[in-house]
Image 1 (cartoon, one colour):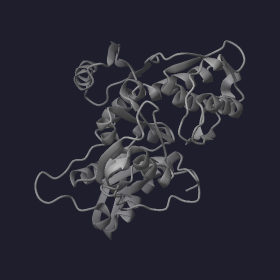
Image 2: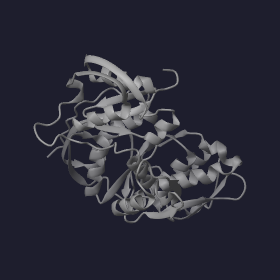
Image 3: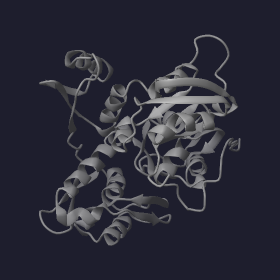
Length: 371
């Protein structure tokens, strides 16, 4: 049976060849419907990734020629592909601009390995230029050694023992707008290799893969919660997490994803869907009209009421705080029969924030300084 593909609610991404930055995150979280029956995996991923200007890389250890059946039913692409990766006994990880599907015992460490490498690089002033972003691309039947040589040229690196890199022929791919650490990790993790910075200069030496060190951060309870109650709660949710009480804070050692999850828990419960208990499915946000007349109401309270109506609020509060956005700030609002966009503008403009709406998902972001 030939592959059948049906895509709904797709929009033109724009003139740029690859979606990067905020546009990348928006496109990966765009809801769509897709149906593939007895289709070649390589073809499925091409249509869902590169054909939509999204960088999607399949690990060399997963057979791209296998036949798969897969469907999305009006759900975010990243969420659907993550579910699909499970059926391949793999895991999907989104770095800054590249989605990677690979074996779970490697994929779960990908972002942490990148973060630790970039921390090491930033600690040495002579390596700061490596934080620049470049686009690395290659054609079908390119060897890993040729890809690594391209990375070396792009970032002015010297690579020792390159002859130890296993010979292979890879399908064409692109890493758009990546750092040296991202590019190196995305290539070497597929070869069970890592690398070490040499004490001086811009030289790297390849070495067998080793899981990166866990990232350590300290958190303080908010509101009436206590250190003891949070440790108990977090241990129940993530049993493998390393948690230590220290004075009035909790020291957490974990992966990048673990720290992101903890930040969401501390943020007050956003990033979830609270659907009505009874009745029909929630009305899509763009079909709703809002009338509200309130004085001195916290922005958070308004957003939480939207959650109760079936909306999903996505807010990276650490990033918002850094940008000077306070969702606990009070506002006065008076709107009548406003569209969702008009309503959210009235709610978020006073705190210098904005929102993107996709189906039932509202993503809160800081306004650029120019707006």
